[in-house]
Image 1 (cartoon, rainbow, N blue to C red):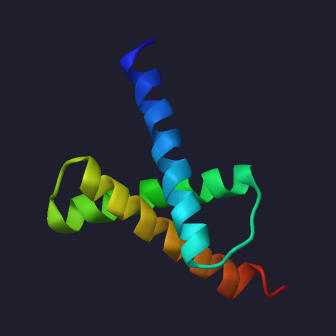
Image 2 (image 1 turned 90 degrees about the vertical axis):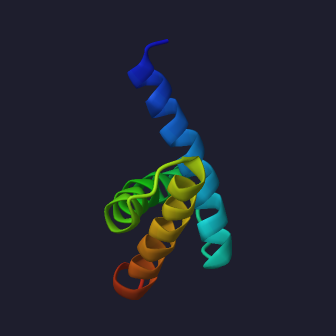
Image 3 (image 1 turned 120 degrees about the horizontal axis):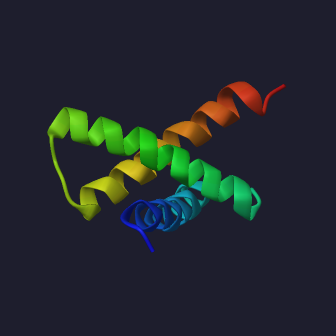
Length: 84
């Protein structure tokens, strides 16, 4: 397995864990693909924000950023999209 493929699989695993935690913290009932998508989106957003603002590396900072990003996405979803 190539390095890029391994990175993608790691992103999915971290995203799934972050999405699971974030959906439980925000009490959002969602299916598995949505939970993973929220976590991956949160991982991308949170990872970029954490690295840009704090210039911190390492898996723990990335995971924390993923959870925070997923929480923001859930809040946006509940606030603007789910109310329609």
